[in-house]
Length: 238
Length: 110
Ligand code: SF4
Image (tube, rainbow over all chains, first blue to last red; front, side):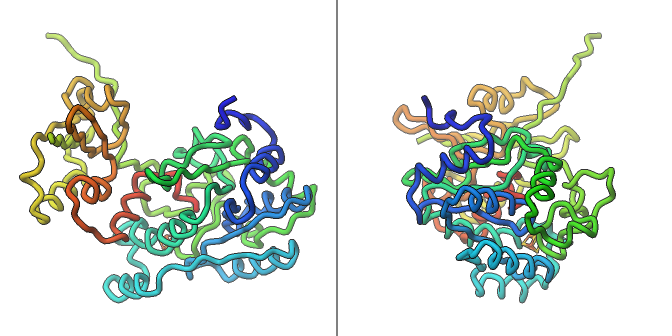
């Protein structure tokens, strides 16, 4: 069977177990965002699976998130690796554009420096990574499979596999797991935060809002500037 | 080698911002003469040459480059990868990372 298909529609635990059995330690890691994806750490822990865990420390996280990272580190006795951006790049950005350039220019420049560069540096050392991505998180994730070749970070010389054990789960599934298993969670969730990222770019949302509304809300939520969107053109013949 | 740039016209009739940016970067870097052909993918017209080519090649991002060399066809949807590999020119890593993020919106939640 094609290994890409091997875990389709399996439980998150099965995907995790399968992934961790196929790659040696040091070549696979969980990317932990400091939010609901804590369930992945709990699942690995309950199954007695050793796994490396890293987290992107952009320098702009909420104080509550830093406290949560420490709670999780202690709770699961984790060797949690924090990935930091290059100080020179951050310094140059701030010197030229200030601390809140994303409100003017959009978030991609700051995210490229604070997230993508350190993430790429880490992923270059791995053969596979595990994320908490779910299909219901945004319009850009509706096709997320449980396992995929990572098109963004693979290179001609280095194929990287991405596992998304929670792809099939809904937010309700995740919260049901957190409650029933007594998993520690970020206290921001109790204040209306659903998707949690950096402090200046994250806000609490109303119950009827999609979680995407809590991130970069000043930007167009469905903006996919680079996509090619054919219009349904009705030709009128006169 | 034959290089085609496919640029996009948005449904609003405006040229896409990224396409304008890429064109300007090519000109500023002195690379514009290396582009043999520019065709347009007009979102209002699925039969526009660029939309047809994108469909044939199964590409859903623009701008993109089609590089034909000795019978081999290579598609580049990342400008900075194209610049590095085809034009053999250097670029700032942060620009390439920004483009990577913009072309992969599912990375938004990392
Ligand atoms: S989420 Fe906001 S603060 Fe964090 S890296 Fe992106 S733009 Fe910068």
